[in-house]
Amino acid sequence: MAAKRASDKAKLPRVFGQARKPARMFRAGLYARVSTNDQQTIPLQIRALREYAVRRGWTIALQVKEVGSGASERQLREKLLDAARRREIDVVLVWRLDRWGRSVADLLATLQELNHLGVGFVSLTEALDLTTPAGRAMAALLAVFAEFEREIHRERVRAGLAHARRNGQKLGRPTTAATKAGEVRALYRAGVSKAEIARRLQIGRTSVRRILA
Image (cartoon, rainbow, N blue to C red):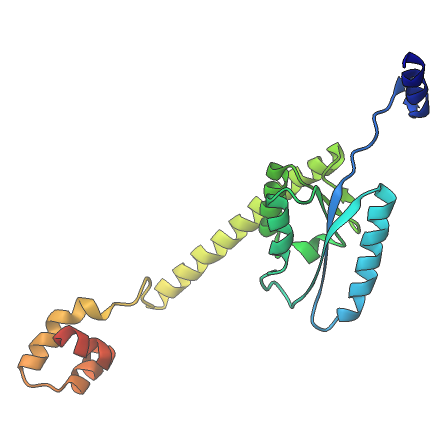
């Protein structure tokens, strides 16, 4: 028995004189996405992702292909995220970062969730591998850029509101019909028709009828 254990140890590759443990078999989820006008690149992406997974010795557990335009919702991407939440995959593999995230903030949010779930993330084009220390450092930089993007958005919103106020535009939610209930009843008692009440107060006829009911 001792001789058999010694023989098994001898078969394992050794690093600095120590036997290396067999690599863990990762279950990979592949995600390919193209615009509606660029669907011919889907096979190229899938082929590159599958070849990379094979080189790493990973098992392909799930493969998702999505077609969409611009920053639209990536609905099929949720299939991979759901698989990660159910612990059915160990790593997400994508062709390029902009194929996965709608924005820097969205990219960071999904990467943070995957990290919390203990699921790795690899982008082939950017050579980004969040299973490595260098990859995790890159994720920290992405967090800085995401905050920068949010601050720019907040500045634009504040500038837009200030511009609207200077031009006399009313801000906030529009007045609801319920706040004009008193005026509706007063006009109706004065003999004004429901249609005319709606026109004067700029509310719907249905709202007028509901108030008077």
